Amino acid sequence: MKLEVERVTFLGSAVAAVALFLPFVEFKANRVAEGVGHSIWALGPGWEAWAAAGSVLVLLLLPFARESTPVRAAKVAFGNLLFGAALLVIVRAGALLVTEETPFGRIGPVSGFWLMVLATFIVVEGSLRNAHAPAGVKLAARLVPFVLVIGALVGGALEPVAMVQEYRNRSDRVLQEFVTHLHLAFAAVSAAVVIGVPLGVLAWKRRLLDRPVFAVVNTIQTVPSLALFGLMIAPLALVSRQFPMLRAMGVRGIGAAPALIALTLYALLPIVRNTYTSLAVIPGAVVEAGRGMGMSRQQLLRYVEAPMSVPIILSGIRTSVVQAIGNTTVAALIGAGGLGVFVFQGLGQAAPDLIVMGVIPVILLAVAVDRGMAALITLVTPAGLRASRAEEGAA
Image 1 (cartoon, one colour):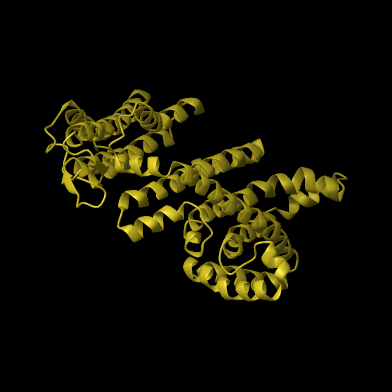
Image 2 (tube, rainbow, N blue to C red):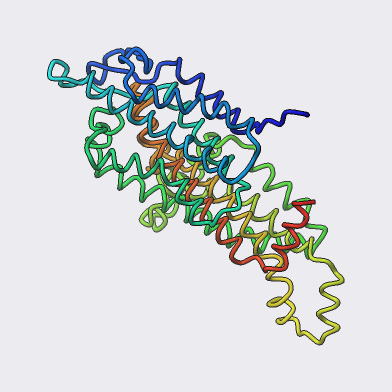
């Protein structure tokens, strides 16, 4: 009898096993001091370390068990237990290393902790992906790590962590830059939708234009983001000098204007491509059948073309908005603001904790928007089309 191994969970547990032997937390006597790494065993192994090790051992064995609902539930439970144990190791490290003798001390998670987080994601997401469970149960399982972190923050257990200290020192600025980041990203995608959807329709209706249109948007996509932001500076500075009214409106060589233009250009390709594809994949027989039933042009658009096209167009917008959230980080280099301010401050000050403090909100925002857009696409996709795609996926 051939032994079947569930590879995703085995991969996650192997990653967690490696994390057990890497530096887990770094201690600095102050902000600029050199850090000293500690593994979970070097801290004097407490029950948190043994809980992590025990979870790894169980997760290494579970992939060999016959797949069933209880086995999947066990994988999710022990996957989240990995994260909980890792978080408790960080809390314990803060209590042990930051004392009255080191009042300016701070700790930071390093490679072992981040690998444990990755292992949690692999195990939990891999177990939930094809699980037959209510959406609310899946959501609750995915939110466990966030609830644990929020609880630790509210309880003050993470005060010695360097990222938390960096946030405390800049809390007002963090909120301000977060809002700026949102405004830039979503304004750029909104402009790209206004430009990209008509371009996609035009490229589909006028087949002579599809190659030039896609040549332009594809070329824009190949330009490095930093270079494209830089290319905006000189022409906008010239326009600002020539037209004082535009300068009064905020159009300058640096700031939000060049960032918004560059981000909009970057967001065009997925929207144009998906709009074109959404029209190209509609079977001609379906449209002819609608006409044969006596549908008007408006009825065809409402009941046939739009239901089939909109989910594909939204998929392009989904790609664009996630991409824009990431690219907006670079916009801080030309004075546009956003969470990239902290990333580049951290680079300039050799402060990795400040970099991570800027990066984590960007990642969480991108993931949240991606999941939200995925739910919206599912909502607007006709039930019959969803069923046919599910059958194709099963086949």
